[in-house]
Image (cartoon, rainbow over all chains, first blue to last red; front, side, top):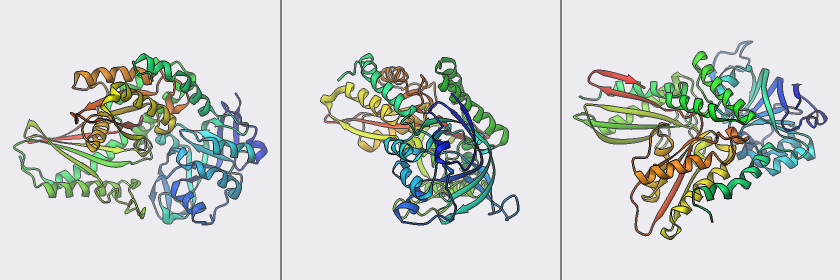
Length: 203
Length: 290
C-alpha cells in the first residue's frame, strides 16, 4: 500500500498509478462541487468558468463567512466549515465531468457505483474516500477560498479551494476496476443469509 | 409559569448552534464502545478520525459536520404553563433564522419544486416543529435536532401484510441497512418504526433514530427486536463509512404504535454518526442546557 503526495493537477497516467488501499495527500488546489452545480453544468448545459482539467473535485457545499474582499479572501469568502456529502447521488455525472472538464479525481464519502468505476477505467481516474462528518478536521486542511463560480447556486456553487496537505485520503476506487466498496458489498451479501438465520428471519 | 417568547427565540437560536457544535455524551460514549470492539484496521482508523473531529470541533469552536441539516424542534410542555401556541411557533422559526444569519450557518433548506433557498434555514413548514405535552409541573423542554441529509435519504416505509409476520419486518430492516451501505455515514443509529398509520410509522422511525443511546424501547416486545437487530446489523461487516468492519451501527432503536388489523407497517430512518441534538429545559428557576 503506497502513499502518494499529489501536487494538483495531474494527468491520466499518474491517476492510473493509484490503487485501492493506497493513501493520498492532495496539495495546491481542490474544487468543490455537488448536486445543483452538476445539474446546471450537464443537464442545463452551463459552462464553468473555472478550469478543472487534471484536477480533483470534492462533493461538498461549504459553510462560509462573507467578508470584504482582500488578499486573504480574494472573492469575499473565508472558510467556516467545509465537509463532504454523500457521493452516490452524483453517480450519473462522473463520466461527463471527466470527459468534458478533464477531472481526474473525486473526493467523497460512501463510494460510487459501476458507471463511475467504468469511467475511471476508460479515462484514468480514482475515487478518494474521506471520512464523512469529520468536517471540523477537514476544514483545517483548507487554506483559502480562491475563487467561486456559479454562486447564484450558493451554497452549491463551484468552489476553488487552496489546500494544504489535504488528507490522508483512502483510494476507494481505482482505474483498474478495483473498488473497496464493491468488495465490502460482496462480503456483506455473502453474510446476509446467516445473519437473517441468526434472528429467525430466513426467507 | 408563562413562556416568554423573546426568551424562546433566543433559546432556539442558541440550541441550533449548540447542537451543531457539541455531540451529546451518550454518542461520545457510543464511540468509545465501538472503538473497544472494532478489530478491522480501516474501521479503527475511521473511528479514530471521527473522534478526533469531535475534539477539533470543540477546540476550534467549529461545527462538527458541514451539513446543517433540516432543523427540527421538539417542544414538550408540562402542567400550568401559559403560552400562545401560534406565537410560540413563530418564535421558534425566528430563532432558527436568527441563528442561521448570526452564525453564518449554511442554509440547507430549499423549496421542493423551485429549489430556491431563502438563506434562513426556514421554508414552508420548516423548521419542523413537534409539540407534545407531559406530566411535569411548570416545565417546558425544547429539543433541537439538525437532521443530516445523507442519513435522512436512508428512509423507507413498507406496508407489509399481517401474514408477512415479524420475520418480514426484520428482513426488511436488514436489507435496507445492506442497501444503504456507506451512504448514510455509518456508524449509524438505525431507527425502526413498527405499527401505526403510514405517517405515524415514519414518525416513530425518526423518534427511534434520534433517541439517546442506552435507552430501551418501552414495549417489551419492541425491546426484544431492538436487541436482536442491534446484534444482527453489526454482524454484516459494512463497518464505518461502508469500508468494512464491525461498527455498522451504535444501535438499532425501535418505537412502536398499535396498528390496524389489516396492517403490518415498518419504517426505517437512519441517524448518521454525527448524531447531533441539544436540549433546553425551561422552569421557573431558569434555563438549563443539556
